Image (cartoon, rainbow, N blue to C red):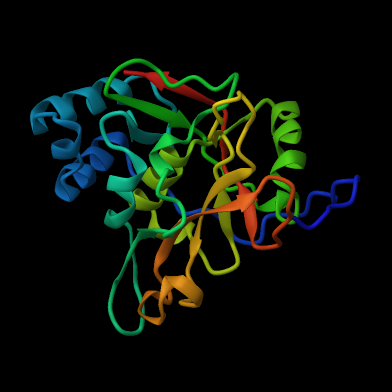
Length: 233
């Protein structure tokens, strides 16, 4: 594994503005149209009602999220889409991440009870690009923010596909896999756009991709998605 220097880079200014999120009711309609309510085993009206309840308390710009036990990342990733020259590209999980659904919240990150919840003020963390996950986590904590979980990052790209922009994508370091001995697996999940190389396949060039990076490595094109908090329905 490549080594990193001990000093983290200085934060840089965000490169592009983030796409606006629609209201939670509109987000619920999009998820229903994608069939996420069926994945979660929820009736459409119950799904919409939960989103309406959240809308009464969640701040503007919040993200609607389904509990990952009901709609896991492996089921959500294929619903991602990005426009391409030869038509829309479907999302996918890299082939060497068959354990994607086993990535769970790190210590200190709690998912609210209930089938749906809201993520407040999501940010892509562009100014932390070229930091490693190990370096970025304490910086996010110092800012009073908490890292997004993988399924939350996928929900964001489902609602606002342009949040995945070439050379401006993001890690979701709130999700990690714990080994049987209690240590953390060195992989950290991320979302970016495939170049269609290697095992991805040429046909997936331009497709939204769920993959992973080493916790100690830096990438100039990956920020660190985070939130100010999570609100229960």
